[in-house]
Length: 231
Figure 1 (cartoon, rainbow, N blue to C red):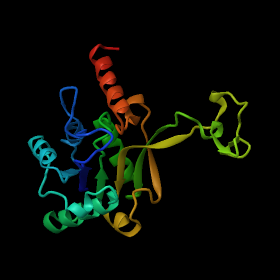
Figure 2 (cartoon, one colour):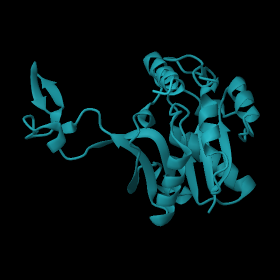
Figure 3 (cartoon, one colour):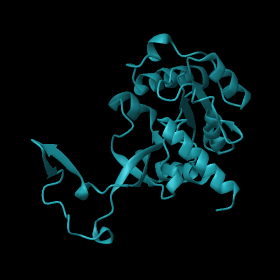
């Protein structure tokens, strides 16, 4: 089985400027995702799609394939990640041959483990190339969530079990952004990674870290400090 690991890393982050090359622990943020995918037998290449020269330099030095800078029209705030994925997929299959699956690794999820990547690939194989998506336990259960209408709180789920104990509620999960794997033909047809999904359950608290704000980045640094302190 041939799986292409793809990392999309634009240079124009506004909420955390320069986050993909910013050091987290001993290495730039993007290197965490590159190193997690290295040496996994099914992964034929780790391709980084970026519009930024510095990201390209760091990713290439870390062993990733960076064959070009992403076209400007695919690096705007309105460009979709699916369009960027299809651009990379089309180039790779034209130059390197067909693949069975495209594995999207967002660089903002640095703490996914190699074991999780291998488990997700095993699920992809066992489920005949259905899409596999990483999920984590929901921090706020949907049966305890509300919306506001005319100044009043209304349960998002009609009949929400507000009086139930948390341990009595059914398990609820959210997509954590750490793992997306789909067949190339599925991505081209459906233009999404969430068609006919199989869940890869990632229980570790750090698995769900998705660095989107400065607060998230500081939380990631705190996790590293705790690990180094052996806590």
